[in-house]
Image (cartoon, rainbow, N blue to C red; front, side):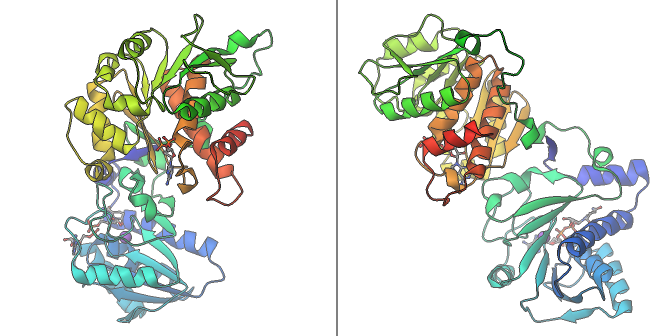
Length: 462
Ligand SMILES: NC(=O)C1=CN([C@@H]2O[C@H](COP(=O)(O)OP(=O)(O)OC[C@H]3O[C@@H](n4cnc5c(N)ncnc54)[C@H](O)[C@@H]3O)[C@@H](O)[C@H]2O)[C@@H](O)CC1
Ligand SMILES: Nc1ncnc2c1ncn2[C@@H]1O[C@H](COP(=O)(O)OP(=O)(O)O)[C@@H](O)[C@H]1O
Ligand SMILES: [K+]
């Protein structure tokens, strides 16, 4: 996993104070990282338009113009006059070289957005919105310097943002690049070193971006003397919408649980390898409950929730006060944003709209897990946030391929499967979430066509 930071100003400051690196050195490395990226990846391109604002984001752009002068046909466009000390210094340097400064926006092969970086601290004015609209309409390769202009420090987009293909971010990864809203704008994210290796530049953090290597599959290579019970017995509680439980059960079986039973009073048409029971199994090693639950018998659900068995709770139960009785336990919750808003309200943490939640996902996820430190929260979305106590992990591999009914049920099944097989809650949540999104990524048919069973088939091939 890679470290994520809410802000890097303090890390820059540490470079000046502890390592005696000047702002000029840091900026030279920032610009030089962008220049190398462009030269390595776009050898055949000719023209580059660098659009600059008045601060140090603009200064990065001016320095980039100097570094690529003569290698490409470079033009600088100024949204506003160079104001910061560094941008004036950089401007002085390019003026001496004779870099072209233009007042027209044109469809260069590459456009680099250096209008606003981490300094964006108020809503965009109309002229900035119009500028970004025009840039977005151009059919160029689009690179954002540090962060696409229009995304603020919290990862919110108040009006519009630059739609980049690539964001080259300075020093370290920031949480603002990993909100659901930002995902529409950031493209591929690369990190530019600022004159130090990342492990030296970075300090401690409690937030991490998950990588493929963080997925621990339930491989059986070290288990030879085994039987089906070795790999756990999952009980999935099916409710009114039985399909949800069945999808979860199938996913769980495909992800390695030795036995899977669906608990349901009505007869179900299940594949032969999945069992049906009317009550919890004596030997069950994990429970999945909530998906498709609908109307239920309160006493029965209370009994199930009171069991001392690893448990994942999903969907309908986030609207029920019953859930308050188990939030002190080591359980996993997998709400989507609407369900999480309902849960926050039930817990008296906040009464907010989905928009407000989506604009502050990290904040509310942390509020919740700080209040309930034994719970592992999997807050679904375009970038899934997984959090327990003070730790936060982000899974950014998902895509709109997954925006289908039933995708969440597959996820619950995958998590439950790992719980049944003995994974710790946080490990089950991380590995199953990665498996879910990487399986969707591996799906090669049309991206509108995925159905839950396709997802399970891809999970089997991971
Ligand atoms: N501090 C450092 O050592 C480094 C800074 N770097 C660059 O510096 C950037 C931060 O620079 P700054 O702090 O100067 O900030 P920015 O360049 O992001 O922009 C801030 C400027 O825009 C103005 N502004 C903010 N919101 C506005 C709005 N909505 N409409 C109009 N004007 C607005 C501010 O008043 C300020 O003048 C980073 O994003 C990064 O690109 C990099 O060179 C790496 C090293
Ligand atoms: N645009 C997207 N990008 C990434 N992941 C997505 C996207 N849309 C949906 N998902 C994922 O798909 C799943 C949907 O779950 P959910 O909304 O509970 O659906 P359901 O209850 O119908 O199964 C979640 O894991 C979510 O993170
Ligand atoms: K920018």
